[in-house]
Image 1 (cartoon, helix red, strand yellow):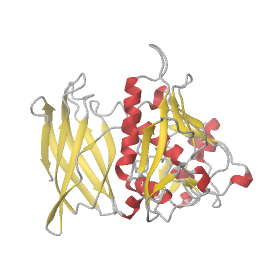
Image 2 (cartoon, rainbow, N blue to C red; image 1 turned 45 degrees about the horizontal axis):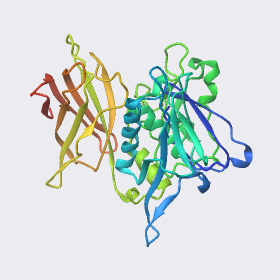
Image 3 (cartoon, rainbow, N blue to C red; image 1 turned 135 degrees about the vertical axis):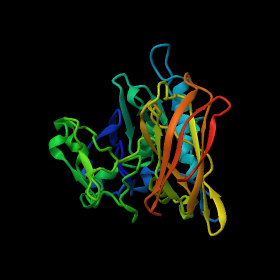
Length: 372
């Protein structure tokens, strides 16, 4: 489930069905095809904003509830925490605020789908609108993706100009999922003038819906480029949310730092504890930092020998100097062997590796890594 387009405005309910990390979209009736690229054009499909005396947007409140179940079915307290964390990811960089419902008429209800389907309406439906969490998307990254749909976003690789940037390998796609790769018409969507976002949380991965294990989508500029990021929002994702909802945060300049973490192959090298990173740089003689960010998304990150990629959104840090990486002491495996961390910012032509080849555990759970 990854694109970056936002489709701005539908006058009817749209379903987007996600099987683990992918979605199935329905065609819009012709009368309703009037949207921006990845965001809704018809303002009635957007969630309402609160304004100050100067008519500036202060926040956009989106109420939600969680349908919990019993011992063997339904969402539980852990799922509720995941939903809260995903909502906070969006709130951190935008004016969007997901709040627990009191008596609001329009709201989202999360529930567990018995068929393991992940599904969301596009934009605001009106009244209660369901957002299902199947077994394949009970993690922060996938819930963030579904919330992006609820805000009004479709997938990046379906934007009208996508053929300039990516190649669809139709012969490798499962026949019953070919429609997932069809592009939207120019009258349906807009890009907000933003570049094609290979790293969007709304962009499909390279092998999405592959029938033979081969790539189904590749970047034209670099066929080996990793596409999409199921773990975290990109800087363009953030900017488009702010543009769509006229958030004041849209005026802030943010960069996207692609952080790739290489876990070692030593015995018991992996961890299920939480991992945090902070980037440090220097620009115009002044020290800058990203603030500490949790690297979270999929549940199987940081396994032995794994390579996991995350987006860290930050102001321009200038020349990267160092980073700190911290392992929480929770989880069943409270130690972790880290080989290195690679930080890239394509916009600034930054590509720096920070070597560790060391254990993090116990009182030595934080490492400061210098560039090399």
